[in-house]
Amino acid sequence: MKKHHVSTTINGDPVEFLCEPQLTLLDVLRDQLQMTGSKEGCSSGDCGACSVTVDGRLVCSCLMLAVEAEGHAIETIEGMARKDDLHPLQQKFLEHAALQCGFCTPGLLIASKALLERNPDPTETEARYWLAGNLCRCTGYDKIIRAVLDAAAEMRTKSAEMRAK
Amino acid sequence: MPALGYSAPSTVEDAVRILAGASGTAKVLSGGTDLLVQLRSGRIKPAHIVDTKKIPGIFGIREQDGRFIIGAATSGAVIGEHQRLRQAWPGVVEGANLIGSTQIQGRASLAGNLCNASPAADSVPALIAAQATCVVAGTGGQREVPVQSIVTGPGRTSLKPDEFILEFRLPKRPPRSADAYLRFIPRNEMDIAVVGAGVNVTLDAAGICTDARVVLGAVAPTAVLVAAAATAVIGRKLDDGALSALDAAARAACRPIDDKRGTIAYRTKVAGVMARRAATIAFERAGERQ
Image 1 (cartoon, each protein chain N blue to C red):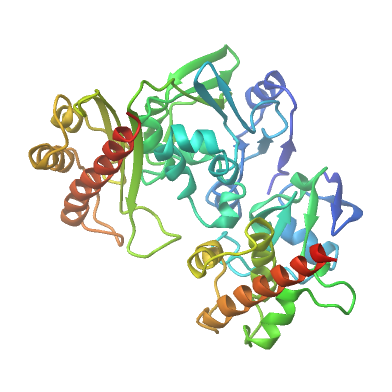
Image 2 (image 1 turned 120 degrees about the vertical axis):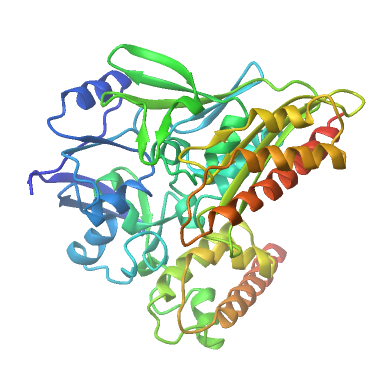
């Protein structure tokens, strides 16, 4: 089968790969690039475990062909922490015990980050609707929502402090 | 399995040429949120995929003499963020934004929602109510056709194998006109419509309806433009009499199926309710534009 050459950017790094056209971005991330943080849950766009952003837009990487990544900027869970410094969302997920098995967590973190980039002060309802495409079978969602809202509050305080300086 | 081909042409002519010359089935890719599910489940086995998103103008929204032109592959998220479109066509935007989750909105397009040809497609009733047209490109050139001429039955369209949709056009709005789309699902988010209702109305200065289009989704093999429901409200204010006439006309137009989402009797009853509620919202919005 003819392979396509794809040049893309993943978490700020230029990345090139060869892939067959039927492979999804998720297939290539996990199986070729060894970036296994994005999870394959349903493969039909229902569960959100494979969430990544493409040019800042939240998408399911299971519903995008890898060849479509050509020329676009992809962000995955692997780019979220700065070395040992966790992103505030990651830290708050730990503090609030917003995960049990952890399978949905990368997708929820990526989706929550996309939310807070657009809306730094979401209401609980806004957060719940935004995250409706990320399924979690363990937590019952309350702890996740608390973690997201708490992270949002902390990030707002920090950016206010930065502005004051 | 024969090799799957993929092309991402950057001109309409190239896209048409590839579609026309494909050996075996060629599928048009916009956002892919339906196409990839079908591809991976084995429900479709195309020989070739033509990604249209590199064609200029196929992604994005522009205004031209009071009309809005929405590129066929424009994502729901981009549609929802367009303030002027939301202001002019709130019902069209509501329909487009009800398709799937935030993630799905990041990719799902009007052309995909239409050409997937599900009777329950959320963006379609409001587009038909809006008298939207679409520009279809093919070997013979381009033609502008009403949105309701595209879907011919569940999973079937009137498009020829070498044709694809380039853009949607929403007409210039008269004063005091507005639209609304509502769908019923048994949960709060992320489900397929049991019934959808799109209503687009124009009022005169006294609040009397001078023009209306009422379209129901998920109650027949295709979205249904219900002329009798429009007649029920034209020439009057939206009083109790008009609402019950609208309700009855909507119910009479239903030809639904029984399935896990709802029985025939239930869908028919809910269609009347959704038509009334969507009409109430559309009238309120139009009235606020005095």
